[in-house]
Amino acid sequence: MNKAWWKEAVVYQIYPRSFHDSNGDGVGDIKGITQKLDYLQELGIDVIWLSPVYESPMDDNGYDISDYMAIYSQFGTMEDFDEMLGEAHKRGIKLVMDLVVNHSSDEHRWFLESRKAKDNPYRDFYIWKEGRQGKEPTNWGAMFGGSTWEWDEQTQMYYLHLFSRKQPDLNWENEALRREIYRMMTWWCDKGVDGFRMDVINMISKDQRYLDGEKRGAALYGDGSPSFMNGPRVHEYLQEMNREVLSKYDLMTVGETPAVSTEEAKRYAGADRGELNMVFQFEHVDPEGGEFGKWTTKRYRFSKFKEIMIRWQEELAGKAWNSLFLGNHDQPRSVSRFGNDTPEFREQSAKMLATFLHMLQGTPYVYQGEELGMTNIYFQDISQYRDIESLQYYKELTEAGLLSKEHMMACLAQYSRDNARTPMQWDSSRNAGFSQGEPWLEVNPNYLEINAEDQLSRENSVFNYYKKLISLRKVHPIVTYGSFCALAPEHPAVFAYMRELGGQSWLVVCNFAADLETIEIPKRFLAPDSQLVIGNTERTSLTPSVELAPYEAFVFSSPAVTEAGV
Ligand code: GLC
Image (tube, rainbow, N blue to C red; front, side, top):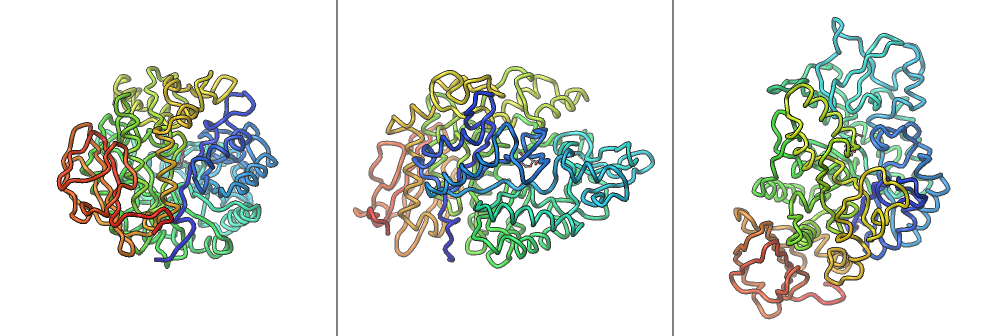
């Protein structure tokens, strides 16, 4: 298998608004990040993925960009950015930018021009359509509720926005737009950034027929996704982007691609495709919703989750590279979702999930606070939420009488994006040490028990467990390059697998349940030269049949590993 630095790396995602506020205005900022680089170096991560810091009206917390080559003033200045980049590089940490080019803000100069007149030179930078007998051009529902089409008085036409109406979609059919995007990317690469995480990049090519989508059950709108997910020209565009920009630098690229199959992932990230290094797939984190998508109170189903994870490991092996994540700024906290966030099991299950994820084949992503086992917030009142998606759907679904307010609050408690966005918990001082001012989103009151300062000082903390896991990857190539083989695929509560490289095997066993579970151990790990690599209990040896503690996880090596790696 071809070696690459981005395969060996561990990535840490920073959501700047919620990471660290250096000037007391209640909003995290770039200087705040620079001040915490030593913390990240201590953790041992290699790459930062920075959620958007560009100029923005903040309709969607920066995923609505009004100037791609400027920094949002509350986050700081371009000098602050350059300083952060330099300081990160000094510590051997690379920086990957969020690239949001499916849409811009409606306050971007291009859009302000575009909406002025049908013959404006920027008109075709966006997607304008005539209505159908006074109605929207298609019946598609937008990702944040409402229609995907917004009527514009000035020129009496509709524009397309797959997300909020303040996020008009860019028209990738237009070569002049594509050139501008590549020019902007080149500018960032020349500055020295180390790659891009590409926001909803599989939505940039739209089927030019603009067909209505299927309406399910009581849903208010049709599902337009077959017309814009993995659209007809998306690979052509990415190959062009690769030729024009990506191939000229040594970058890490990861595409955010909702609703991709393994087959499609191989097209985006296949080693021989000249597109991207890897994609984020979402099968394993897509809630089993019904007609209201993610608005459900159903918890995940372990058997399905396991089937999905095994399939992605097996089908991408040797062909494309997996990205590995259980949380990000759009997802609930992983320990609340896949583990157990009660005081009894929180740390244990957070370590188990980390073991599970970091030992798979692929590049692991740590979402800020995950290394502390931060949890969902469980807000009691809708006024506590800030996220546009949560607020818009709450209004739309309750006002239409489709879901009761109580039920919608229960859905939000599980799946609102604000769960991931509560401020980082640094210490036990006021506002968890995140800000001297009033935080833009409430701090989780459990910061007194869950915070970085406490965990740095405690040897058996979640933080120190992550640190050890990450360091194993640096020493043992088997973690990155070893093959994957699932064990006991039918077990209803245990996820077990083997990794193998050059005569060495590692056994990874993770109990996803709060109960005792039994698992049979392959013979070679019973031999005297088999050895514990890492685990979250006192266990140091194995028997043919092991009774696992709740949320127990361990990794054994056969034969034993050496300090210098094998
Ligand atoms: C991606 C981002 C999300 C954002 C959306 C629109 O899914 O991760 O936060 O709201 O795209 O840009």
